[in-house]
Every structure is written in structure tokens, then in C-alpha cells.
Image 1 (cartoon, rainbow, N blue to C red):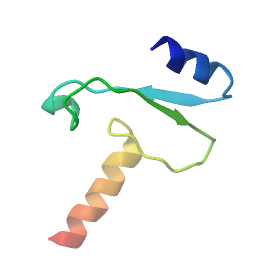
Image 2 (image 1 turned 90 degrees about the vertical axis):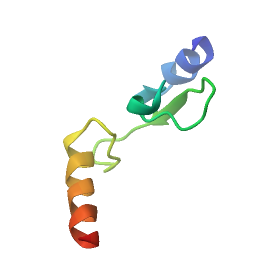
Image 3 (image 1 turned 120 degrees about the horizontal axis):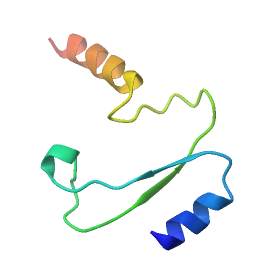
Image 4 (image 1 turned 90 degrees about the horizontal axis):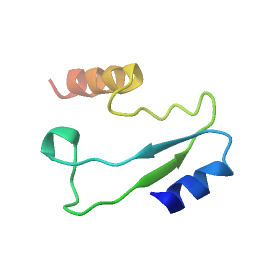
Length: 64
């Protein structure tokens, strides 16, 4: 976590993401951290954002 914080210090914007447990979308059974550099308008949806819900709705409609 310290190294992730050091890496993020040089970025103008970023998300720091880790997940624990199935309900939190953990898919790798060890601790890992994602440092995700961000830019305004990058379109990257995260699981807790309205963008993610909109993309999921489109995908669900396409498979129904």
C-alpha cells in the first residue's frame, strides 16, 4: 500500500482499488492492489459508478 501511494503521488488523478471477497468482486485469492491512472472523460467505468450500471444494462439488453 505504501508503494502504491508513492506511485499515485506522481499522478494527477488515479483510483486505488483492491477487493476482498466474492461480494466485492475479488477474483484472485490473494491481496493485490490496482493503481489506475485516470483522465477526465476517459470513460473507464468502475463497478460502483453510474457508467458501469449503464454499460451493464446495455450488455444485458444485447444478450436478452
